[in-house]
Amino acid sequence: MDIPGLAMARSLGDAVAHSAGVISTPELTHYDIKPEDKIVVLASDGLWEFMTNQEVIDLIVKTGLDDPKRAVDVLVEEANQRWLKEEAVIDDTTVIVAFLK
Image (cartoon, rainbow, N blue to C red):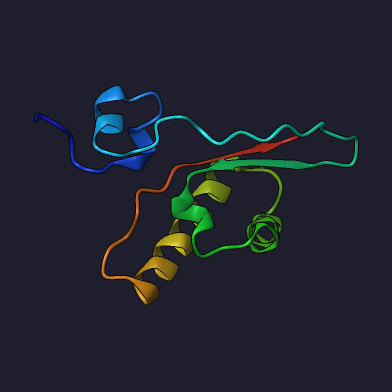
């Protein structure tokens, strides 16, 4: 069987990886954005494994609400540090940060 290595960040809709036991259907949640919402974070389990929703938001606010790329860089670095404290490897981490106006 010719199957890829386990790479969760690229497994969405991947029927080949699915045949090896990877769930290729994303977990979705519906949320109605409210006027008071300021930040949207979309991320893989590489971020959420060792960080809570509140920790992520607090870290973004600490970096300032003007540079989403910097927020992503800070979150990925923090996630990597936490992975290394707990594991011998770092999981693939995908993060998107959007600031709402």
